[in-house]
Image (cartoon, rainbow, N blue to C red):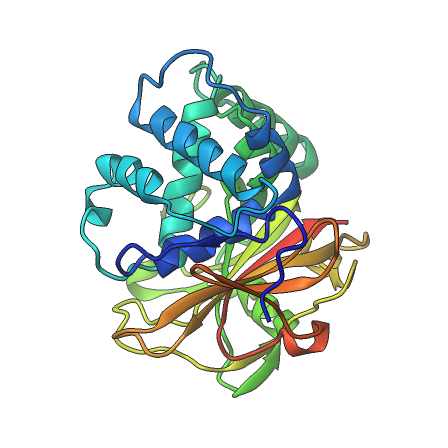
Length: 335
């Protein structure tokens, strides 16, 4: 049975292997603050850049998708404007949803960015890590200032320690999503993937960095923690090998309920809790050779889960049926 009760339950026509795009667009369409902004967005003048054209077409599409009694729309103009900037999408081959998401968000960010290039970042080494992080973020925010950054970008803390002299150097970098590895077990919890992501790794041999104190290449350890959490946390499960010749079909058990994912243990200040609620999943079914993407999203009004399979929209399974071996990109909202 197909449900049409609420605005937003709108399918997207597949215009030739575009299920990867449709799946991501549905997940972004259910990102509350982004959709609220786009539904009220009016381009004051005609788009002057390729990025602004993408933003213009996306806002037009979102407005259509959130109009009552609209069952399905064709995202042809959005595909066309996106392909004009990113030539690799101009054909009709299947593409990777996470790669598309990164390029797409970057285009939206560039279209809205009011940041100004300033001087290079200079930070006193004697400052505390938290103060360094704060100053780095302020500097980054002056350069990259948009709603997209406000919603999706967090900050990673990277710690490099020399095993010879014990010197530690810390850097802070923005992240748009977390790409987490999967353990070798056929079934695991999302927390096991996050543990692998922050686990200390040894840099030796060809990977040895130059220690700033020893002034020569040394064996070091490197580890990550999350310094600043975004409002919308995107977690990418690394199911595909670098060459995309093989796919892992592990079942990753991820928290599906309200405030169920606690990211606190992965934060740089590990003694505080940081809760997130799942609201969308991009699923990839099948093999690397072909395969098909669908989205499962939680409607902001009805709070019901629906499956978006290109132009088909159906009421999805209950919450405890959301976990499957197809889950590829998870979208969480900070509670």
